[in-house]
View (cartoon, rainbow, N blue to C red):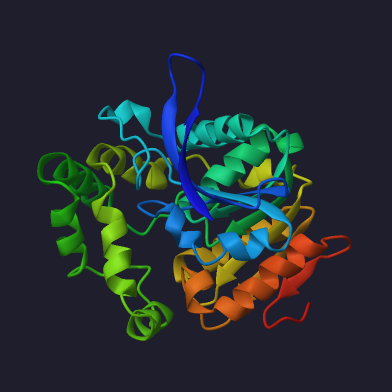
Amino acid sequence: MEERFVEVGPEGDTMRLAVLESGTGGSPLLLVHGFTGAKEDFVDEVDRLAARGFHVVAPDHRGHGRSAQPDDEAAYSLETFATDMFCLADALGWPSFDLLGHSMGGMVAQLMVIAQPERVRRLILMDTHHGAIGGVDAEVIAAGAALARTDGLAVIQELLKFAANPLENPAHVRTCAEREGYEAWCDSKMLVCSPAMYAAVLGQFDTVADRLDDLAAVRTETLVLVGELDKPFVGASRRMAATMPAATLVVIPDAGHSPQFESTVAWREAVDGFLADTAGRAGVITTGRAT
């Protein structure tokens, strides 16, 4: 596995994205992280999946990690992230590829497969939503965006520690206790993000148009994957799996929003099985058994 930088987009309007890459020459697989996440959300999987025959690329979105961070809030949207991912695939010489999107990355992946279904060979939607997430007052969202602009993300992160975090669950708490440095690493990812990105994208989660009807027309083989403790996303995952014609739902026991860390063995079993052979699969899997 190596980290490198890739210039994506048309000449004169390029964006520098940092990527983790392994398995050059294998079957293309793009791993797309979520809001205030990072390419290192897949750091334990890049070489492992490459060893299974994939050319694995995990990028930092613009405004995240070590990728470029434009100051203009207009440079950030779910649609822009989706365009960046297609441009990255172009730069890699990938006419088509397998695609995994986590959380916000799953929303980006939905936009991608809706816009250009012929390019997405197989799709994994992981702990994500088909529309507005809801549950947070619009005034609170506006205040968070304003605070990001004036005071930066360190202040917001401290405030979030005292607020009710919908993604906080026993699986995350257990992983923080069991995996040395995990909690500090989770915090550090947000702190290197662009405040402009945070302010621009935060409000979109509550106002974005619902994609469920569009997903009903997507015939790409799809794995909808969710931790059973990830309450904001379990219902949405079930709806997507029930709506998409070629979708399978996998519910990972004792996992929350980041099952690749919280229940690694079960997560790998689901992902590896899906990528190995999706032919004829359908239904719901909760503990490795289709129902």
